[in-house]
Amino acid sequence: FKARWWALNKVKSVCSYCGTGCQLTLGVKDDKVLTTIYDENQGFHNGQLCTRGRFGYQFINSDKRLTTPLVRKNGSLQPATWDEALGLVAAKLAEEKNAGGKTVAGLATPRLTNEELFLFKKLFRDGLGSDNVDHSAGYAHAALTAGAAESFGGTASPATVADIQASNLLLVVKTDAYETHPVLGFEINLGVKRKDIDLRVLSDKRGKLSKLPKAVTYVHKPGQEVALVNALAQVILAENLQDATASGIDGFDALKQQLDAFAPEKVAAACGLDADTIKTLARDYAKAAKALIILPLGLGYPGHGKALAQALANLALLTGKVGKEGCGVLYLGEKNNSQGAADLGLFPTAGGADADAILAGCQNGSIKTLIVAGENPVVSYPDRKKIEAALDKVEFLVVQDLFLTETAAKAHVVLPVCSFAEKNGTYTSVGRAVQRVNQAIKPVGDARSDFAILNGLLAGLTGNAPYADTTAVFAEIAATVPAYAGLTMAGLGETGAILPATIKPRFVAVEAAAIPAESGKFALVTGSALYHCGTMSRFGEGPMYVCPEGYVELCRDDAQALNVKEGEAVVVKSAAGELKLKVKVGARMPQGVVFAPYHFGEASVNSIAVGAPVTWVSISK
Ligand code: SF4
Image 1: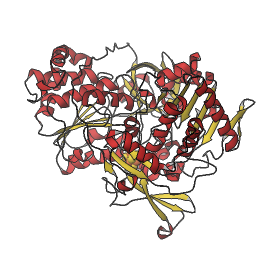
Image 2: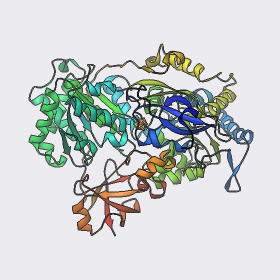
Image 3: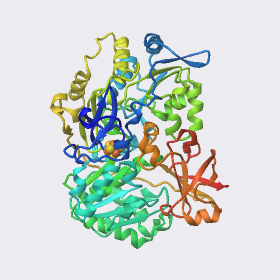
Image 4: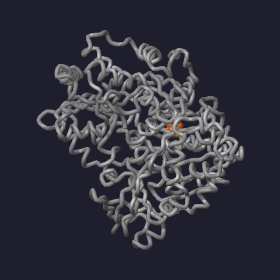
């Protein structure tokens, strides 16, 4: 960057990529973010940042940012004034309110601040009388938190980041924390190398964590996670390894009875692991003095997130490894404020439509107006064709975003919004840390914060005065959301505050879906690729240098059998369609399983990944 260190204005804030919640310092000059600065006194991570946090900030001042509202006229989006654009939105929302609020819906990204998410929900609940509101489609973190809420009585993880280093054994389930939440990957690395913590990885492919010393990786067949975790619980009961408290927890008898069907001998073949291996893993987990389960999860994992969250909760509850230092379950929401979105109830709570139902409603005409704040369903939700058809059909689509995303391009009104560097507020991390986001630069172009947009629309619909600022909304959150009681914006200071854990434990017996293999086909696994998830990082230099385009990854034997080489193009075909992707050959994938990242709009694997939890594909040159 072109500036002397001392010439930079330094503003402390929080990374807006993943849910780890790393604090960072933005280096600013002439109202541009020129760098992020390493500050070893900052945050639980001592200033460490991953590629996204350290080198992915260029999206803030990207020349591709939307700088003015757009309104669709004669079929194309044309620049408009804020008065014109907001006038159209306000008029439509007033119509929807008068019609009873049943035909309006909203999808908001968990990238927004807590205050913005609170206003979004309030706009629908109080402004429009509608409960049709959701985020990230319940495809990932929402499913996880729903599972956590039933098993532990609260939406947040019963563990914090500090429990990683305090544990004796880490059981990382599914994929690689290095990819989804890299700084947590560093924390695991530190714990394993410096504190000799045991590491067990349970996944459908190998990752960087598997390379750590002492890491034992159990590669199972895709989609078999729930069956496998149930089998671990069965072993714990069969070998009397459970904690004395377990039988006193609600649901114990029903769980015990149901787990009979998951004896390792019965599920081993389907899971792709032998029974003795499953038993060894169960014993290691149960006998560790302190063990922490970590479940990194992104949108690329549809199907049984809730069941998996509950099966893992059962495991922790059975062994008494909850509510103690170094123990518990750390559910890793994908986005920077996934936890805040769950805490603030950004999903239907009184019978409204969830994201799936909202999109189905757009398709069948029962939803006429849709507001999308920061989500890009066309690319990041499963089954792209279905999503596109729904968004093409809805009568009035409003999109608030930084960029003209594939979803925004379909809108009737596009509102340009501020990035995290242009606004104030709070995010809540996966480790339950509520931290302050601080404005570092003026809004880019004519962009406005989602807060300002939602605040104005809400005031217009209710007739109430708008909130004075984000502090006023945070005060209302603290007064109405029990977990946030007692917090104040000023009290958060530079370090933030950790929310209390709520634990009202209950065993929930969960079934595992049968997944019949399709002969001659590959199981397609989707997810985040090296350090990024698309929405902002496609406009960040660091992440795009590391992973510039979509690909399909397969093992050497499969590549050889298909007669394809690294970099060659292949056609990947599922029941839903086909896609041309470049081949990446590596040692991570087991035979018969292929991986593709989902965040490249032009090579969107979600257009063909429609099976849950496994999509079967054929591959040809
Ligand atoms: Fe940002 Fe997540 Fe990387 Fe931390 S781990 S720097 S929060 S992307």
